Image 1: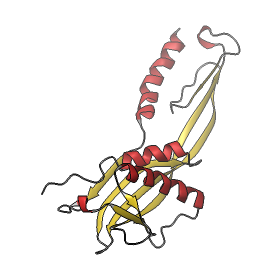
Image 2 (image 1 turned 45 degrees about the vertical axis):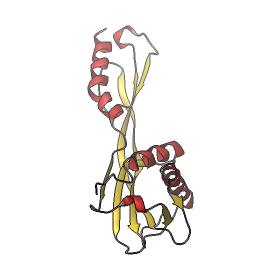
Image 3 (image 1 turned 135 degrees about the vertical axis):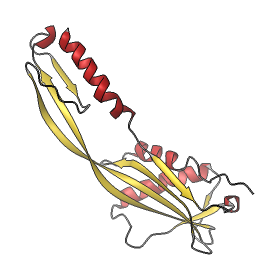
Length: 187
């Protein structure tokens, strides 16, 4: 019973902050710009910032295109009022997995417990088996005035995609990133 209570305390202490941790989005924009005049956009590449993975490139653009279409923007290949470009950066996060097995706490032989909340507990019959590094990516999205080439809006979302480039992770990141786009400005 004591081990079960200790495990519950450890999960509450170390597990909940990791569960609550997710994608973080932030943005900034040029003040005094009337964003309501921009309704068309065109994708452009930033020299030296392109992604060599065409699969990931397509997924990122697809997720952003869907969010912009939902906000009334139209994609154009020529004559667009906004240029849209993105950059990615890759980082790594440590994940510690534990494999616990033993007869502690009245569970009897063969009792197993798997967790990944990052805490380490060493008790009777319990040990850490695996520890891994998980790659994830940050996405930076820029909107430029196509006439002046001035940067109008920049957003950044952390953990925008994972090693498998899962569509639902990218869709969630795009929604978070563009939640406040276009910005509401007063005139």
